[in-house]
Image 1 (cartoon, rainbow, N blue to C red):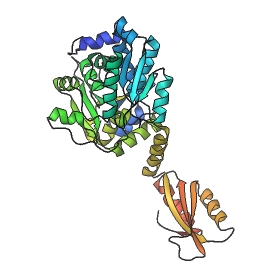
Image 2 (image 1 turned 90 degrees about the vertical axis):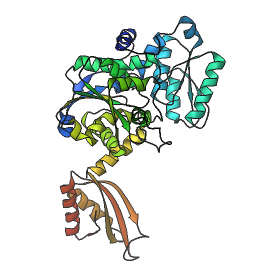
Image 3 (image 1 turned 120 degrees about the horizontal axis):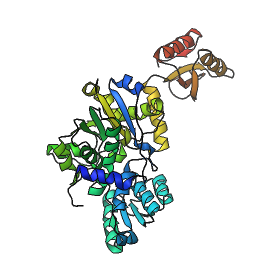
Image 4 (image 1 turned 60 degrees about the horizontal axis):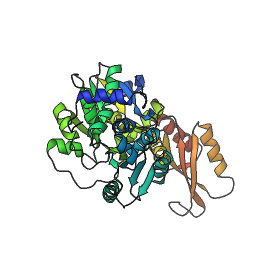
Length: 401
């Protein structure tokens, strides 16, 4: 295959990787539709073996290797889903795989990639330094580089996501696609050739490289960290941008708050785990609701590999934002037996006590009194107000929530 990629290449990729990757479900969501005002269909790529769509491009790229290239092995630069996709497919095909990661890569990702059968080499404090190391190692060992997005076979493999989605739901008005380097977006653009379906890429507002490239603007300086780390790419690929431009696909951005809410909605509504990058399509429906209301929208949930601590934090923050977890401060006499009535009253009011801390040193009216910091779970805002009123009625000195 040359550098040009066509819809025919996506068809060929579908044949090449059949049986090697999961044909993931794409299902309508009544509740997400009710929340967003769009008719929502979710493509669950988090159900791939390694938890993301990256299995597809890796499988298609490795299937095209010559016997000599297979014997020499492959190398990839990644600390995330691409690393795991290449490691998994290489192990399945008996191909030696080397993954280069910066020394700052999370331990969990290093261990997971090693467990999938790859040799992990950590060099460099940054991805730029790790990339230099990967180029050197590839040249020294004669390894075949598997690029995460700027490779015709990888693009074609990722395009099978759109091919399956449109086969299941040919009546989609629009498909929302997580976008970093553009491999998935450009592949889906090719898969939708001949279709009237609008393709819209979605990026984190902190990493808008594809938006900048399509508008002819130079990319900005490195941004701060985003929860959508899987698409935190400074600049898109040389191959992907022309494909997206030829399709006249639009690319929009979303903020961190919308991404976090989308992660929480996937967990609470669909009972499924979405990483930040995987949730940006739903985030677009949340943040740009007016654009998609009343339309039948395919949302590509591209992956579910999120750190468990980050997920837990986002879910708790979501409860706070929705008014289901509130913070109260009560001042009581600092003597034995004064805490029990407070805890009992909270229980009687139907609230769940999550956390409690004494605060004797700051903000109390007297050295004989103590502040009690409470974090409680309630049903909704009305329930929170009734709990506060009930505590005041019981004689507790309650600050504002």
